Image 1 (cartoon, one colour):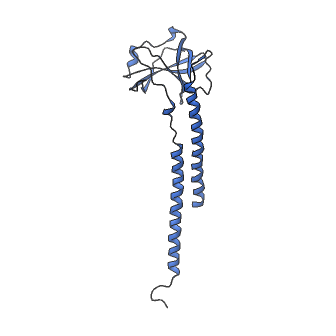
Image 2 (cartoon, rainbow, N blue to C red):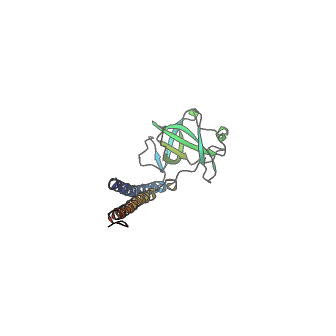
Image 3 (cartoon, rainbow, N blue to C red):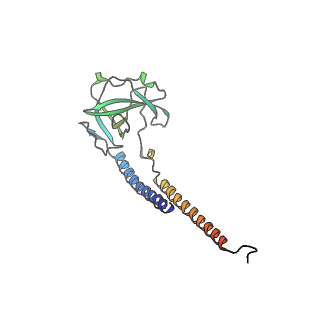
Length: 201
């Protein structure tokens, strides 16, 4: 079992080191995206590699009850971010329209609806994940009294693969140490059984 477990633990460790290199390359790409100038998207088609990219696009929003989640504003204050499901041409997109200190702060704001038609919006794209639209656009401006939400940054993305690799290598080292101690005690016990006892002829 030890001979099977040790290679497996080491393989997990080396796999995490590979993941670390992949994550560092990804973070470098995302930093370049964040530093790139604003790009206009006229047809609503968002490239797959536009995570953290600043864009300008026209969106249409239907009449709806906003989705409210915990969030922060650009000043770092905790509160609630307000989301609307909209569309850029034929592409569904979720707008992070702004931030408020209360979960009902949006009720005092004039949110975009169908009567506004297509409205120009500028903000930072982030992959939404989960159900719903693939992309969320964190808008740079917010309708009063809301304030802009804090856009995501590369610092918010974890890169724990090195610590995971160290854990797997540590597990392997601990297992190997325990096994060697077991073998040592087993051999000592075997020599004790073979040695002549007191009072034996």
